[in-house]
Amino acid sequence: MSDNSKNEMSSDKTVAVSSDQSISTEIETNEPVQRTPGQLDVLVQGVALFSDGYNIQIIGYMNTVLAKLYPKQMTAEVKTRLSNSILIGDIFGMLLFGLCIDRFGRRVGIYLTTLFLVLGIVIATAAHGVTVEGMFWMMVIGRGVAGVGAGGEYTVCTSQAVECADSTEAMRKRRGMLVAVATNAAIISGFVASSIVSLIVIAAYKGVPRDGIWRICFGIGIILPLGIFFFRLRLMDSTQYKKHAIQHKIPYKLAIKYHWKPLLGCCSAWFLYDAVVYPFNLLAPTLVAGFSDNQTMQESIG
Image (cartoon, rainbow, N blue to C red):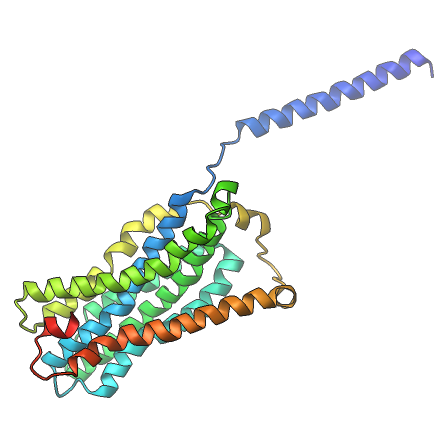
């Protein structure tokens, strides 16, 4: 084969390669440029956890109202059921959705957690029965279902907040602050909001115990989850999730082997925090109400 023919073949290959590269470049440039998750994406997760804090804590104040309305039926055992039902649901929700969002994605978690949370709040708000005891059981079931959704929100929102805060170099420098604001600070703010809302609603009823008080306070908890639901659906999965997501045959044993130390430290810190915060907040209104039998509902809650 002559040198001229070889040169022609090599030039043909060069033209073919360059044309393929130009086509791929055109395809890449035609693809829509996706927005990088920012601080707003992190703070939206905080709003969701704020609503969880509200829905968890509100029962502590409503126990006082229910005790005024139904002094005979509102026994210590019933109070325990009402307070613990959402916490037990939380545990199941964390375990269930922790596995779910790793395998099926964050968006599926948003759908399901909102469904459980809204359904549970509706059941608890509309609680009714032939007897008062039956109404309390319906309330317990509703708050348990809501707890599954709230527990799932912990895993979905915390994961998204951490991953979104790690999206850019500028956000990495403030990752700890952003995650703290979107998780613990948001939940505690929800606790405070539940107290304020309870006082306002009770004041609207002029301090007279009525069924409308606890129904309104429970029902208000549905506003934020529904309000931010459609906005959250428009949020994209974080860059970190897209890069590192393993949706099949997730190597949990391998992850624990290499990351057990930070995992143990994180779990221990959360355990100590929750062991102090949740019992205190749920029991505080009951403890305050026990100081005197002559307290008004505002004094018991405030």
